[in-house]
Length: 215
Image (cartoon, rainbow, N blue to C red; front, side, top):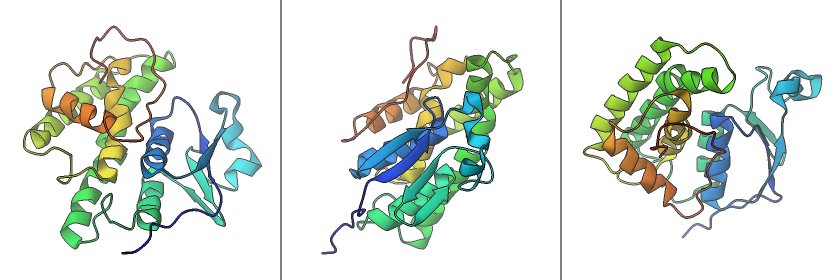
């Protein structure tokens, strides 16, 4: 049996508390039981646009990780790296072609419809921008499709949790902060509860919402 590799020193995570993209990585690091240290990047003061940060990520976005000599940006890329580097079991990112493709399909959803729908709706509310009905409608469409998928699957891409679940969790869980209720989506809410029951789960900072269902 192959021993699970461990980093020689704690992984450095550059993060921002309200970023669901950054939370994806923090959550996965915790679920893997990997040592890591957080460095908060103050986006409100432009810390992500300094020459030092741009040297790590030209797109001026969190998250970024430093793992020894490896510096890597983009949350889904980081999830893929961590799964391939530190999950010898292949549980979180299947190594077979179909299993890997099914995960990739939902990573694409996390990078597209999830960001353009619930994530953007939440950002508008948190930062006092005008609410955009198109974002909220896109979120509802996405959650309806996820609810259909989860009616017959315990997790979004496989019988066990994968990095696709991690990529989708944060902004889905926090959708009520953007004015999108999760009440109509019982299967989504049950799936969120299954993620939150995983050993090593860590949540993201919540903001007050009138919706009683935030998970």
